[in-house]
Length: 399
Image 1 (cartoon, rainbow, N blue to C red):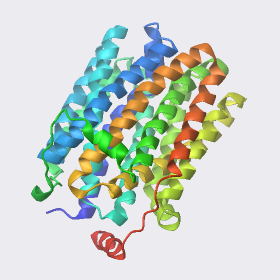
Image 2 (image 1 turned 60 degrees about the horizontal axis):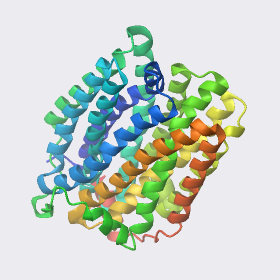
Image 3 (image 1 turned 180 degrees about the horizontal axis):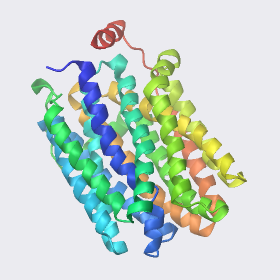
């Protein structure tokens, strides 16, 4: 049986390779969509349908992983992801591009299974640190992915990023098939109706989970709306194209990798997850709202680092607290509910903010910042967690 440390490493690299494939697409999608005549609403629909499928998939895949285990879910979605990227590469119309995002969105629902895997192999005291490691994989994916996407599109043509991403997904499948063991013990497996979405309502009604669930919906709503408006605004204001947007996501990725891979664990032990959750939410609200007042690309890059830091402490703190409050037999289900609400926010955010942007560019950022601030208000109601000394000792022995 692999040690806890080796299994953490395996899930880290599994998520990393998956996110490199996703990151390849990010800087080219706005301009890819514009080739087919898409504006703010059209780009918002491409991002929104991805999240709509994630909303369905996270709930179903998280619950299914509680029943059959994490490994089969992760392996199957890697293959589906490869198919979505091939369709992306072959897209010669907005309709095909839209369908490619449908397929990839469903595969993207595997994050609930990956987070549940991490929850399986970490103690409650170490859970936020484990989620921070997954967050670091996200950050590195956003460093490496956009660079590969921009370079391959520039030198090999518009279809190349999708094909490279598909190849990485297949490589991810092979490596995970060989080295990724099952994490869910037989005694912790549960049976639930596959299409029963009542667990989302149960999580919202749980007094300890409810504020987190609200934050899980509002923060992605605001942040995804921001990611629709930002490339369009920066293109008009500063003349940004794929290269500049690639650097933008690299700043986010580098910051996330440093904060979540190294600093978050230390910050969480000193200040607690609740404090980081609140600071992260209000930090993102402020940095999103001030974008229309920026007058240079350098200023935008600088404030993006602050935004990325805030996001990098918010994400793992929110995930870690959800997993701590969840019953051990329903880690995948509750994390799936949280991810489903996040996907719902990412579905509505791009559509709403895309329309707002088409009416008023500054209003899109102000509205997104206001929604993020409401998420911060919800975070103020999250209860404080006191970890038992035994949990801390167990986490230290596991390392």
